[in-house]
Image 1 (tube, rainbow, N blue to C red):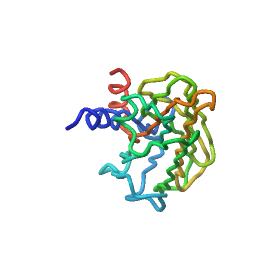
Image 2: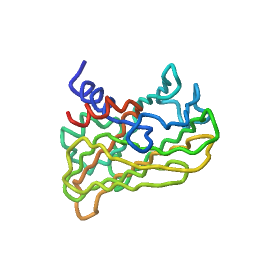
Image 3: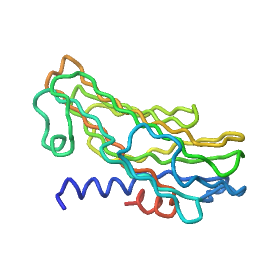
Image 4: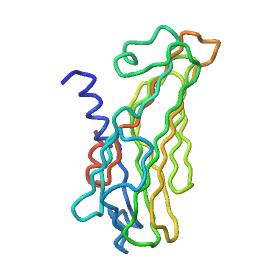
Length: 201
């Protein structure tokens, strides 16, 4: 396994989607379960695996990432970016998925969205995470170089499905023609115990 592949495999384990109610239980007390497969996805570059009891699921993404390159991409970006835009000042990518729920009841959810961001001087990134129309915007400033875990709270009354969209944006200021940026989201997971371990690491 190459160094880059090893980094991505670690980051894929870090993105955690935790279904929680009240005191931090892994699932809601009313027994919300997830479907065997999505009823819609915007592309097929992912794997969705529900647990045996349908009370958890894992999504691993392949290439949910975006980059801009001002012409002098740092090695740390070049090793990760699959398709950097050579001269574009902005680049975007989005992924949407609909996961059916086993019953039409209320749900309260804590999400942990994680991935990796790298931006040079004059460049920045933005992550928008939407669940059933409730949106969270996460900005990443210039000179970032880190993995991230972003907690996102979601609660709703009776719903029959989770409609999730992840939107990634990177951009550079025209005053910085050599600016570059890379942003990725690698996985979504329901394992609360694993979430605590990964976050600690």
